[in-house]
Length: 612
Image 1 (cartoon, rainbow, N blue to C red):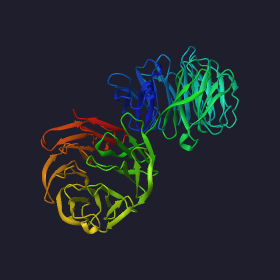
Image 2: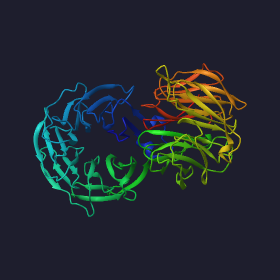
Image 3: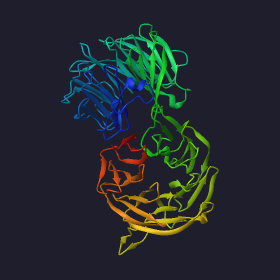
């Protein structure tokens, strides 16, 4: 934002802002009130800009829509403007916060300047024959607009009403970013040809090309001016952040990010204040840089996390130490007051099994199950993968601890088998343990039972397909061999596919949820289960996950309807609802701490709530 206090960026279909001061502080110093997420877009967001008066935000998406919404109060949407069918690549404001500019990939119109609250066009921003990647406004009179695109042109427009005035063909590849200096006297352009050019701000005349430093290669993706207009910073495909001096026409500093690997590529940058630059890496890391008076930059803080939807979450020993993962192939360990630790699995993760609150051993590891049909151990202390992966060679539908010491894991696989894992690998397999493909599973050493939910049979009666979704129970008489699992009965109350099951910590209850909206609680006694509660039915869509809170008397559920509910088995009519918890739906929940519960969703967020 204009004061340099908040960082505004896009992630998924959301627009976020965070306090730069809190981001740069000690780990854990960010509070919920320091972070805001606007969820008004329905398609992936690509660019966002806050008005200089800090009252409004404009944001664009891949569908060619820009939305103007409030930066304060209830953050209501003022207007939505459908500009074209392609992506919106860049958007910005005029200095007086009255005009919005946007550029992108339209068929005939590729850039616009319009009044922010009515959408009225103020002239034509034309001259390009291909996608326009960047647009910038000169806020001092006489007003000017500059654009750069994939036709390798840098075009200047005078107005308002704006009309094309001149263009330059000095770039030999795509122009990725053009920016007016804060004082309006200069313009810079950078492109995929590794070139940097400087122009006069009023008439758009080319002043000079900056000297290419030794070793520069690849695209320069973004550029931003310093507040005093004397220097600017660029983000490059060669994994380097570079600071340039305007008058000298040359680079004054370069900094290699990480080891210079692909994920270290710099794709965006802002110069927030005189001493602070923020850049973003290809893998989503946000880097905060300290800038000295001589223009040298030093990495101060790295903000890291997962990217894309999250599939699973687990609490280590019932504490506030959480592990979350998704399709990006990373597992993140989040601890209060500590920076997150990130382990690279390489394949999408769909299950995490951590030790329970009752665990008394010394193991500080969690098991992670990925889409390569393998299991890995991740250290909760270091966030690193431990040992070799264990190949199951079958998709893990459900995982749970089989023994009270939590040294053996029971895996229900997509091939109707039950597999027992230990630290040394696969211990045994009970082939054909169930008659149909499992949809969920759980186990409890406290009551000595295993529950496996099954698909409905491929049969029909009178032309109507069966709605028999069974839960097969097994009695556990021993864990040394598959013979220790003995069929102990079938539960038949669900009319939709069972999606999640959890035994309470004491083994007194079994909770099961289905793809309709039903959550059933079974009372477990003597190796059998009897339906106890059947009216936990406030969800309106598929229930995706269940978990018990500390004490084993309250149950938390998450659904694709975006709601979280906390249910009380002692007072079934009493419930706590968390509305609109995750845009797109809740993927998984986990009890944590004494009164808390964590959730992850398709919006990529990890949320932690606590009961009053």
